[in-house]
Image 1 (cartoon, helix red, strand yellow):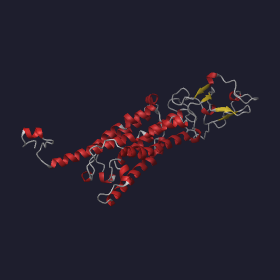
Image 2 (tube, rainbow, N blue to C red; image 1 turned 90 degrees about the vertical axis):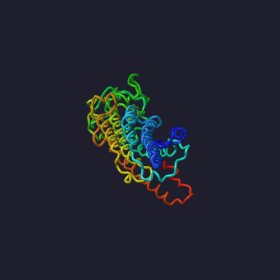
Image 3 (spheres, rainbow, N blue to C red; image 1 turned 135 degrees about the horizontal axis):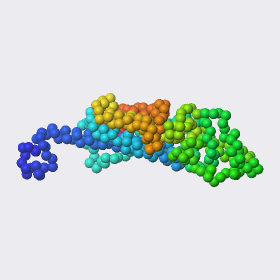
Image 4 (spheres, rainbow, N blue to C red; image 1 turned 45 degrees about the horizontal axis):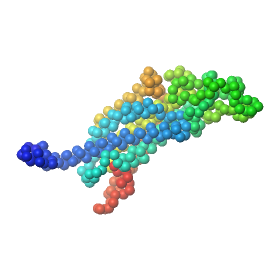
Length: 372
């Protein structure tokens, strides 16, 4: 007893009750379990966004896509939009069934396979699909067919010093006399190409952002003529770039707008993820939405999104752009909703499995692999 006990007893005790009330032991256990649960929620929330950042980079290396998400916008997710919501999850209230659980094993670590499974194999892959849907949808709107993007990153091409109007259907690569002089009519091989015209297309920076790629991704057809080896489609969004003041379609500027759209798509998925992981077993409707700090963290995410897409002087710093409403992460909304549906379904199945489990029976496979 911290008040009534002697000094010798307090020094020799393993536990000291400051208020001399045995019920405080229960409250202390409850608080410790709540802290542990909230730490696990923070881990799941932060780790989930790692997969939609990693897989696009791997796809660029393996499949040759132009990078779907820039490195600096990845940092904006990790130390910007994810920072405050992950802190806010520490203020989450304890679940209603907190004191009915069995004590966790004394050797159980904070980061476990179950957390890895939920963050990466379940929630993370849904965000990966959301990111790629946003990527292909926006690139398609700016004239690049999805299957035409394979193995285009880092490929050397002829840079013809002429910018065509992407909205003029009468201007064509094949009709450019300069292009026609690139191929030998006898051998069919390219010639008369200056070394400074054979370069790798700069997708990441602004050096080639004013070039019409329809006049760039070309090759000899073997008969003295030329043909394109990139599949284009009709320009769906007639928008001028805020940086180059030129049409976005068929230029590398389209990738900058795609980066911003993919960034917004991942953030929207993290919105849903924050509410989906509020509970581990019970439905989120039981937990309620009383954590006002979490709403403040989500508001900070929205503020950063609007700042990156609205302040022109930040465009060259962060590589973001002023995307239209349709590209403002809307392609990721179905997968964002799917996250909540998946988590609620998993929790419902977990409650049913636990209710049917007999005393002494081993937990079901679902509980063993997903209940963290």
